[in-house]
Image 1 (cartoon, rainbow, N blue to C red):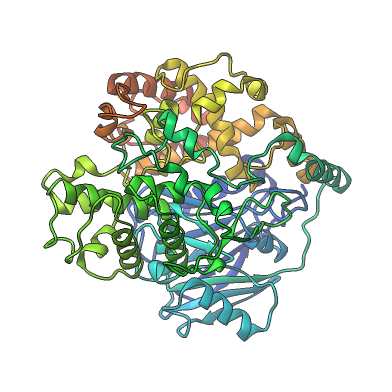
Image 2 (image 1 turned 90 degrees about the horizontal axis):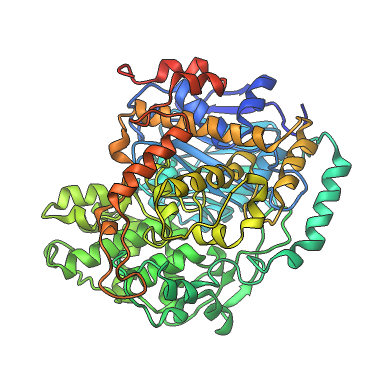
Amino acid sequence: MKGYTKTILRVNLTTGKISEDHPDDAFYTHFLGGTGFIVHTLLTEMAPNVDPLGEDNKLIFALGPVTGHKVPGSGRNVVGAKSPLTNAYGEAEAGGFFGAELRRCGYDALIVEGKAAQPVYILARNNQVEIKDAQHLWGLDVADAVNKVQDELEIKALRTAAIGPGGEQLVRYASVQNDVMHSAGRTGMGAVMGSKNLKLVALKGSIDPPAHDTEKVQELSKWMTANYKKITEFPWKWGTGPTMVKYEQTGNMPINNFKGGPFPTIANIAVQAMFEKGYIVKRPTCYRCPLKCKRSVRVETPWNSDPAYGAPQYETLVAFGCNCGVDNLEAVIKANEICNRYSIDTISTGVAISFAMELFEEGILTTADTDGMTLRFGDAEAMLTLTEKIGKREGTFATLLGEGVKIAAERIGKGAMEYAMHVKGEEIAMHEPRYKQGMGLHYSVHASGPDHVAGIHDEKVASNLPAWEEIDVPEEISNLELSPRKARMLYQVGLWRQLCNYLGLCAFIPYKKKQIGDLVEYITGMKMSHWRLMKTVERGITLCRLFNLREGFTKADDVLPKRFNTSPESGPLKGVTYDPSKHEDSREVYYQMLGWDGEGVPTRGRLVELNLEWAEQYLPKSA
């Protein structure tokens, strides 16, 4: 088998031991990479109910078979652990160059165990690995820490995964920043890194991974580089966010903590405005990618923003923009910079602030609760002040919000949970589940919480059925429909949507579905088919379910906040609800399609069918 290095690096920060694992071919065949590697490790090597911020949690940086190979979109890696935000399976993904460099150092994954007595960083120069003192880096912002290490080591183009003060201070939704500006934002992986006193991982490699058929890999790479602009304008022309005005008109745009309604000034914060105002100073890219969907912006007034931290993408523009009632582009750009500087997730931070704003407007919170801050929708200054305080864990109230909206609502009481927009403890991403009801079903059942990247965008599937012919999506279904038919769409399309997290491949590259299978075959030499790829994803989803069941989760956790069961008072979604009875019916059908029983527990037959007989030991004892 080609494509992989067949080596996993293991670093124990408690003992200082550095070792290597060499899995057999069956491990790679069954799990491919990314999510598959992570959940297998967490389930088989960790005891139940470990403290996510304790020494026994494991932090895993995992690559897929495509990562680091010379094709567009091969710069992705997944980082996973038990989530401190949800206490469930947690993972996040990022681009940049870090993942490719880990493979160029000779590894398919890095497993970090234990906890260092003092702040440290891990340095790998090819297969020469060291644990180095980082006490002088602790407390530094992400870019300052990375620049300091690069200067000290005198290594050009050092590739890094780092945390800032947010990760150090254990904000439960802290991110891991690849190469400063690429965020692995969700589920609090930066907090796990901080809990281990690990400031950053620094890599410099020179080992090109071997491919089974290098010539065919090169042919496919050249084809995509020559044709991507002919296939789509997304995302190379604007990056993410060019449809924000349309989304506001149709109802997909979360507004004022998902209350809904109109937001007529949405164009003020749309991505096009960054170009029109001349804020774009650079179009950065990821390893081997011609699309350059990322942006770096410079704003000098009224808030100075450092272009090293990139620019807000769609989710960030919405989370700090209309979902906080803010139509000030400069403020949203600054909020993005603060989050990347401190390493905190922009989605969770924005939702936490919108939650606080609504509680204040409802009278549940007063200035006595908020450390003197007045919090109202539309207040850009208050939004920025609170973002900074959360990143620093400064003040009682900001520290509470850094726990996530679920824990904050539990502690506040007084009906605050009604306003906490989360699933399993993770704040909901910036796609309105009343408008995309298949996405809503996905939000509710997904193991790591409401992940928009792994879910289906209903209206795009329905309007572009020919693109899904290889998956056998049989008919157009309204994005507002929630039904067994929609569960079928989620099953068929949703498996494919999660595949990139196993392959280490960017979902934005417009490969045809057959080309992706071919690419994996050209790289690894494994005979590949759509069926085999989908079974790999099902295998991972099933193991993630077993992990969550072991941690105490049940089907009662596979729900959306009650807010979505009611209609917005105004705006394009007036009269539209997410029906809880239809949710229960569709969820049961989706369970059955995955081979789970009525309680959401995988059946023994499905474990056998997926070649997971060994995992029967992790089924709930009552099953």
